[in-house]
Image 1 (cartoon, rainbow, N blue to C red):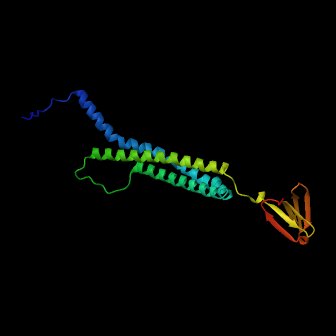
Image 2 (tube, helix red, strand yellow):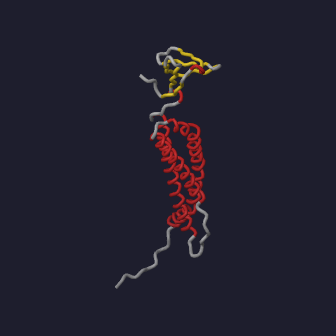
Image 3 (spheres, helix red, strand yellow):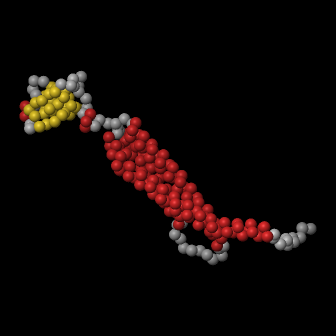
Length: 209
């Protein structure tokens, strides 16, 4: 024969107090998660501002001067950092208020529903924090590339070859004033010539040897 089930004894005052405390904690956990997510939003918004602002003002300006694939790699990493920062903000917004949806209350326990929402909000907040860390790491990598990756030749690095019919002089262009070209040749000597007397002016990356 199967054992007969019998009603248990009355709960003790300590058990009743513990049960009430558990119910109160379940009722408050969603509000606690929402409050924490709201505080994180401000910091994550600052992160997004840092990444996007620095991308426009500093890192983004350095990318065109970088050599070949290094510039492309830096741009891809920077785009990934911005995308991850946006995802972090979105996850924090979900954590603080949830995703709008029609209310479904029929045959659903209110406490259980709030606990489900609290678990979802906590997961969204954790996702936001992880995305923020990844975004900062990617941004740091992009900045490091602008510091250490090889750069392409800039206008300041280029030289000028001028031919006045009798000689060809190569050096750094200093100025062109009143129809006269001034440059410093490859051995550091100054050179000047009237532009109208020059047969050719060529820009190069290095002086020929």
